[in-house]
Each structure stands twice: as structure tokens, then as C-alpha cells.
Image (cartoon, rainbow, N blue to C red; front, side, top):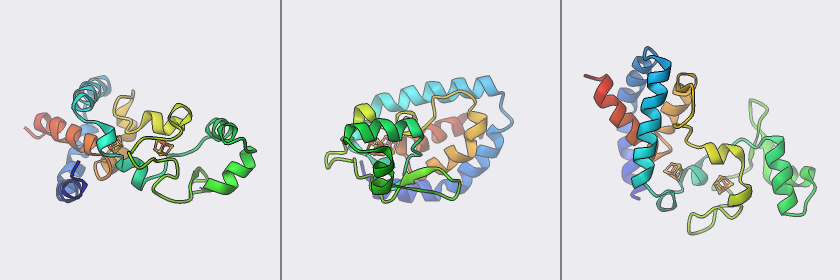
Length: 162
Ligand code: SF4
Ligand code: SF4
């Protein structure tokens, strides 16, 4: 994966994608969800996250309490010690990582705690969920992080920019 090229392209396409996001707000909710789901499956059939790892390298998932308790158990720590070691609260009061890349990311882009990873990591980049209308702003931001989301926007754009 050529991440430098991805950054260049995602930045240059951002303002067009922002306009597209505003048009998508007017789409019917169920039709939009179906379209995202279809493209999500199509794009991830071809794209291997192990060639990328950009989400784990550059952004933090939110850790909910059950994530913290589960991971603390893996490290045989108390949940409070896990928090002290790895996490802080962001401006919204959510627990996020102290640093990026994620300390649990291996050199081969494999997640060292894959079976126990946070819910947010399992669901990223959220393009196969219901009610995409509710997260169009977040999804637009993710065009700058995730090559799969950029590809999905490109494909959806072909229909909505006609
Ligand atoms: S816990 Fe695993 S999947 Fe989640 S950000 Fe860290 S390395 Fe990536
Ligand atoms: S940024 Fe997207 S394509 Fe890259 S590893 Fe994360 S989910 Fe996969």
C-alpha cells in the first residue's frame, strides 16, 4: 500500500467528497445503507488491511469499559492500571490511547491483541453499519485515514455526482 500516494489523493479529493457527503444526506436511509454495505464488501474483498494498518498507526479507537476490563485481564493487570499505562480521556470524555501508533500493533501490521481488541477496532471503518446518515461526517473524515473509505466514496460519487 502506497500510503504517501493515498494521503496526496485523499487530500486533493476532500473538498469534492465534502460536497458529496452533503448530497448523501438527502439519500433515502435504507438505500444509502445498502449501497455502503455492498461497496464495503466489494472493496474489502480486494483490499488487505495487513498491507495498510493506517488506522492503527494514526488514530485511536475509543475504549469502552468492557474493552478495558477484557484487555486488562489479558495483561493480568487491574483495569485501573491498564488505564494508567495506556489511556487518557479525550475532549469528549472517552478513553483513547496515549500514543500512536497503537502499542498493540505488530511490525507486520498484525494486532497483538486481535481476539481481544476493542469494539471500535472490530467495527472500523464503520461502512457496513446501519444508519450511515448518522455518521456521514465521521465517514468523510475517515476518507483521510482509510484507503477503503476513500474507494467507497469514489464509487458512491459515480452515482451521486451524475
Ligand atoms: S488494538 Fe489492535 S486493532 Fe485496535 S488500534 Fe490497536 S493494533 Fe489496531
Ligand atoms: S485504514 Fe482501513 S484499509 Fe487500512 S487497515 Fe485500517 S481499516 Fe484496513
